[in-house]
Image 1: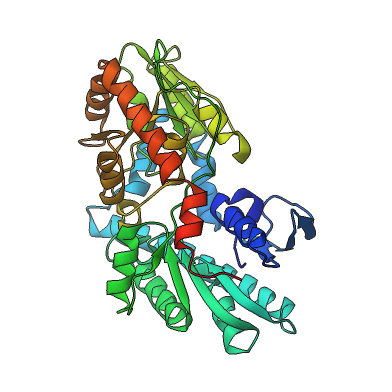
Image 2: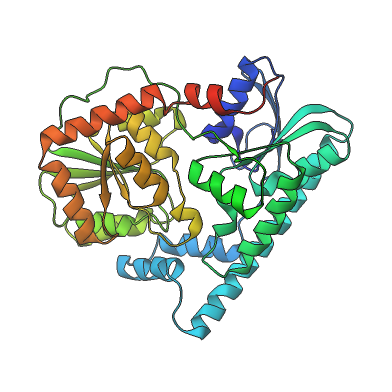
Length: 408
């Protein structure tokens, strides 16, 4: 199992490893070490080898540092400048130059880690190498080519050819890397059917990639799905960072009575959002619960009524997103309020588990949430529908058993 990132902090990869182990496979995990854990560790039958984690590009570190320390209006302007496509050619050139530098750093750092992985496993043989995302494809492809692997499985967690805004050179570069890896892969899986179809068309694949959604394990605790809290509890859980519509979400609560918003998580926008809440006089309506451990996700969510995802449709990767929190919200018995994006829309409407934001601005977000808050009977129905879908289909047990294309 090849991963750039920490396996114990990546729910999808960890669940895949555990399911393979339960099927009888002997699983070795090669990952990186952003959390300063032991370099070698045996954890629940997984043999974990950790390599030094890549460092973020200095301009990105500076941006994240500034985001949390500037006056909210300046912080929001900085975030908007990062999220929006520049109008003037000069601003576009400056932004693209900085982004190209960041991308070059990403490629160079990833390649260095891949070569370390190849060196570490140069004398070993694996029946299957499972490469998670584009940034481990080089190592996976080379292990198979050199006879170190019987088969290669490529697992695309994102739509990599659309990570950047349309026209960015990084998109084409990632597309070429992914194309070379997919040609060498025996199995291809991804996180939702929208991306699966895009990959099939984009690389002229004979078969549509298998879809294994990022769903949690079944959560059997008795939940509050037949009633609604007063005031209604709304939660956003995840990283507080750009493209998530968080400033708009916070500002929407100027127009909402009878509800309270909890921002559960951390990230570069945290301090700026706290200042925004204070300056708008929303401290009685918006609270921050801070960092949480992965195993706390569902217990935290279960004490709420509505889970929100106001993603801004800035890149194709965001447009085709299927975030973990969608399935976590459903498993925790929450109604869902989400952006009107292809997979989010088909899931929310298909299971009748919530409503969609018309636009990502404070007024539209407020309108959608107020319509849900005002109809308690319908809100309870949404909660029950999401919970049933999670227990029946949108859970890891069903996703892995029915869709993972390789067995030991």
